[in-house]
Length: 419
Ligand code: ASP
Ligand code: MG
Image (tube, rainbow, N blue to C red; front, side, top):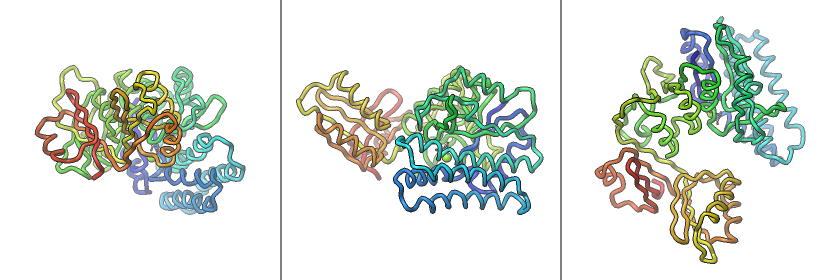
């Protein structure tokens, strides 16, 4: 059994849904297909959450934007007389509107998950109805009943034992069907909706593959495989045909957005290969992530992590930065869901590069100010070069201003002003 994952970009239009159908049509069954919200609908639903939670007057308008986007796609895919799809969409809209009528609870994260999850529910509803109308044997799986998590909303942790049993009860190895389900979302034992963290659909695909002992996972993307640099900023770039799990986890830690960082572990643990292929050119080989018994020759790989902030903390009482202090600092970071991408310590100061989130950042600074002198630069990016050579570093960095630099045998990293 294979697991296929289609991200938002692949199903952003009716044309995208038809393309998905063409890709899976000839695939052997059973096949598990994991789908994200269409296009940028998760962002659009985040706007809905914010309007709802902050009781802003644009709530209705933001909600309309989500509904009309899906209605447009449905209109192109189905005949006007097809009541079934419109009935199903209306049921979801009604459920969502119902939630928005009540006063928000105190937990932003809880409200976030129950609202944002509609992106995946709407996309899988449209896609499953479309595939069915093409005559495919579709089984719609509400993943919230199969992937069970704790109540850590927005970054929920999966209970693998419980989920394994439920997934195996729902998805059968012997029935030639296409099991269509949602990425990114999950549920608690008490039927609350949770999510696994932004861009988490890759992770869902990997979890399902692990729980079902699938033969492989394929992530269908708008790039022809894992590239050695972002073609938007580098020219020429090349596809890397083979990568180890370890390489991919290092790349995603450096900020490569090609695969969600949590995706690798469930696959590595069961040695399940991961294919990264283009939904625009499905005949191309793409990249395969697996464990290789030999050393792979890799080209230099460039990763620019943008929108970073470089933060430097110095204890006001001049005490040394020691383990106890560090664990407190990390506690504060974790409580604001800040993720550090580079860390450097000296005797009495501690610098780290983190993803910049304006709202949380200022609050966090306020909290740290009591004990630390806080300095920060917001307009920075983190450039990582895997498999670097001296020539490449000279060429890229040259005389540029570098705030922090770190090198080990395989990776050179530079915190530099944004380009
Ligand atoms: N729709 C979710 C997001 O945009 C999950 C995903 O796309 O992987 O974050
Ligand atoms: Mg998405």
